[in-house]
View (tube, rainbow, N blue to C red):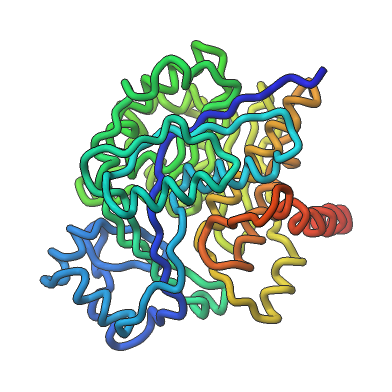
Length: 397
């Protein structure tokens, strides 16, 4: 009999307001670009807090927003956030599996909070532990330039943390740790959880959980100490209790304080992380596993999906928002499937394949969350890209 798997996640969940076709190279945009790290200006691919941007610009954000978007309404209002988007995608990929994906978090008692409750109820994620508290709901304005980086596209995020300031470790409760897999996703935007990651990861491992951490741009620590590496909890002891760390190129360098991906990977492995995946947009994904939980990989690289790249060249109305989050969701789904199959050691490359095709498929629609019309819809759409990718890497070997 297949074992039931419980995945519990905590971290960033917010309302995304997405604006497409915003030129990051326009004259009007250049006025608001960052000139030095942590100054509160806009930088392609990075996140800034709304309050800090207002100090940098010397203007109210809503006025600047109207200027940059030429007063248009958002192209889409959607569920966003590295934790919830990943969990939604994982649950969609596991629609026929004996698995429950639970999200823990809070929103505000406002229209955005009600929007999230309504939208989340239409997904396969269990939201019994998502509550509406006092402050305004976390939100992000996402500006997207599909022509940036030679047509690969990029985004800029202006974030308001809101109610997430008030979500504390005590609200997780014992049930959170009674899980097979616990996921800490984008906790830099849930400050109290982020600052207590060292203890939370230790507790999760003491309960026998598989621990996964996926990161987000940590503007709070970038602002406070732009010359220092970003902390992950109280100390680097966090890493020894991470079974799988998923981060992107920029975040890997800032978390490690190193100048290259190789040095960053050596830092994470040296601090005790069992396995690491580092994404880098349209470039190669870097993999490492110490061999304890996953099959051993000293260091390897995997390409992006050629099928996705070819489709994008034909032109699509989507954007890159949520690619990293869906990458994580694909990895989670593969981990669940592998755990249920009873393998002796997990296959990090197989998990990465599902991450790559999941992240790539996100480029075909606007916003990170794909709202299914029926159960199994997204899996059916993505499966051909998985099959193509298996052939792609088979031919490259």
